[in-house]
Image 1: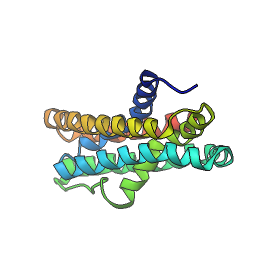
Image 2 (image 1 turned 90 degrees about the vertical axis):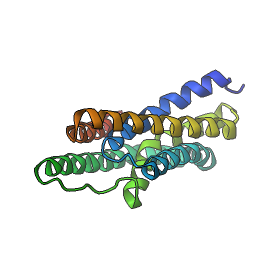
Image 3 (image 1 turned 180 degrees about the vertical axis):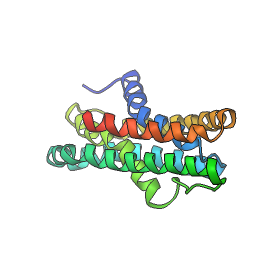
Image 4 (image 1 turned 90 degrees about the horizontal axis):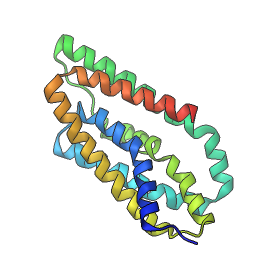
Length: 183
């Protein structure tokens, strides 16, 4: 009894909502084509890989991860959100440039934080005898497209509202972190 394509698409959109929100925040400050590609690719890749990893690792690891994953996601998103707010405020004062969250460990941390839910989905799809590879491909593609769309929207908002949108982006990251923490 596998999942139908419409159910997989709905699941992919639901999982991609965090990636969209983070992409919106990051896109308000980072909108170079390379940055859009890096974040979209990595979010899509991690959303693709996490269900496969969850399916492979099984229930014990998923249960263990459920205990600490919300805290990890919260800490990463809150840290990056506060950093984004501080940099936006200092840019308004000094005209300085901000660090690029689409590079290095920030990129990896954001990718993991936005895709941790997909780990449990992978286990669930294994139990439901769903086509895990097809579902993972759809989930990854949808997350990548949602991230790219959000970053482009973030750029438009940044162009329209100036650097203050970076503050909003930081607040969005913190809110997502709290949401993930509270479940």
